[in-house]
Image 1 (cartoon, one colour):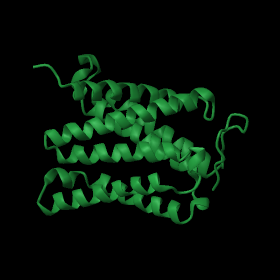
Image 2: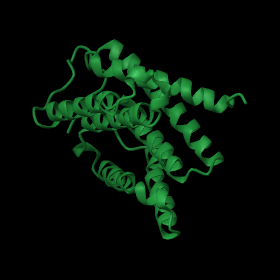
Image 3: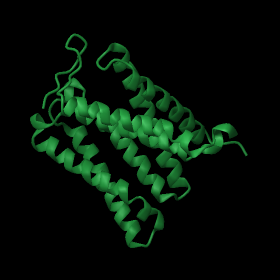
Length: 220
């Protein structure tokens, strides 16, 4: 039985998202290559997460529905965080803020009905609550939000989710010699380490992209 077009699209864009996300981490921040690759990563990640959520709905995989919605939300809000035209809060941001609310409501409903899968998704539920609190802070006091840090952690975290789903969730797609937990965990650990590194530079050392390549004014 051949895979569905939706599954093929999900796998194809997911692979592109992981590759482009790795390039974005390794290129000079603020450069033209980084911005172009970042846009490509965001688009492929949005498609990947949307198709993943749709596939999960079709197979009644409650946890994966939540993960698909969360990944879509993180990619969309992370991308919009450094868009010049949305320096102030706008209606698309308000619409995206509803996604964490939906995620929390679905998770709580599943937990109330005794869903073991939803209980295992508790860390992602807490992440959705944290994201919602951050959205409220950005909406009520946009000038006090470090938009670069918001962009960094959300884009890195959605890349982390994609890498975890591939390397740790689908080990059978790799050659037998690579199917070692410590080997497949290396990309996930590297992404997490890169996220912490850049967040420290931005939040502790107040790093900013070079002015000559910066297309947006990012402020605390």
